[in-house]
Length: 212
Image (cartoon, rainbow, N blue to C red):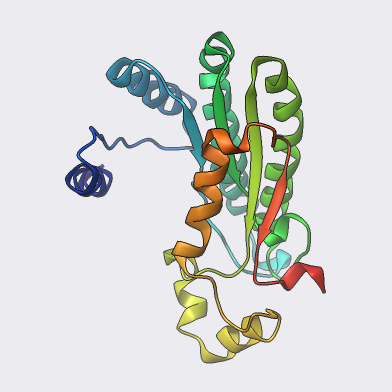
């Protein structure tokens, strides 16, 4: 919560807009529902939902426990599903909403030792499609962004491993990992009225990795 509130304060200072930080366990349905209701109570409405929470456990299947597999699914899939459900009626009543789900290149291709994560991100892509159809009569759009290798905290172990880092670079035609700024423009577009005719989309941001 403290980290979220710190980021909220930075956004407020930079933009002059009211911003608040919240905290919830994405695997706990009551907490997800509560944070959605708190945002509605504080701001009166929600225009944009970006489902970006995610974890990754990298090991061969025989070295994974069922609990670890379930944890990745609960965090990466069930959590976003719960948030979408919590705000669905609100979006439909307003006949407006922008839902942006964060998938991965592993929504459509794969890498060894990623069975929990790849399964979850494939599910996020498929979750996007029925929700887009459900939202369409109410002018609610639902899209999926699918990043390739980005220098996030989740990928820090790979960034610190020269062999793994170069292995990823070798697969990216643009020859580098993504910077966080590379993803911002697409998310802003999908969150704006400029994307009002885009729904059910699955857009890669991967330096050309998946076109090979």
